[in-house]
Length: 265
Ligand code: SF4
Ligand code: SF4
Ligand code: SF4
Image 1 (cartoon, rainbow, N blue to C red):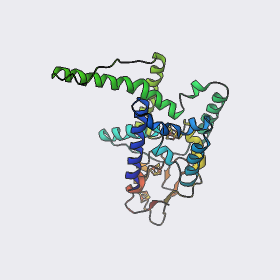
Image 2: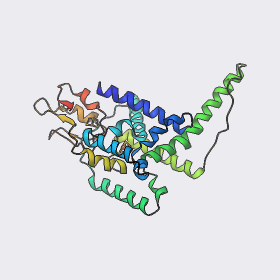
Image 3: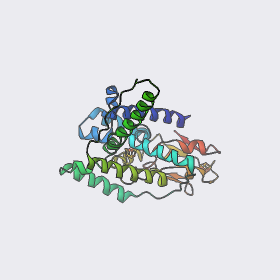
Image 4: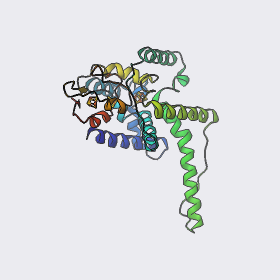
């Protein structure tokens, strides 16, 4: 149930944000204003407070519902699972890499290197992919439909110009797309728990969240099914522990456990 709710909510936000990036729906600008790093940089205290508060209370729900790059990685993994089984296992957190990545991001932003920092900032990275790759792709598809309609004697769709905004940005978007897609297909939320600066900060807040995924050792038979499902590779079955700082609240593990040993409370 929790997983289904999360998927519906994430899907709605993801569609809304993509419409926003493709210029179809200005009303969805609100979704853009609650993105964590841009809100921090714009001193949008209401949005930052809301995201930080929810994360400190209940964990990284932001990372499973609101962030478009997180949902993009989940979609890649879902597609991969249609063709080949994906199995994960617990790995210790890369705390030093996460801290170094977040520190480097902060230094770049403070020293005027925001363009470089934007390569790993999740909202910018996904926005670049959507506007530089998906927008021309959408135009190609629309033109193909327009050609078909014309062939059938129904000129109801006008062809549009395929607009490339800049070759260097297109190149960065292409490389980001491939790198993120490969990482997500092979290792789930690897980017989220090593490189992403927002993930590092939200992970700190989520580490002690009182509403958490809990593993009941009395019920657990250490079958390991939950760890194989966990895209954050954060369930340590042998010790009966879950790294809350890396858990992205996808709720996949809860439904996987046949013994009812996992819950979110
Ligand atoms: S860790 Fe970063 S990229 Fe991953 S979902 Fe959270 S904000 Fe988005
Ligand atoms: S799926 Fe359930 S029983 Fe199996 S290891 Fe995970 S918590 Fe334990
Ligand atoms: S611990 Fe469960 S809810 Fe958290 S990321 Fe792993 S599978 Fe998702």
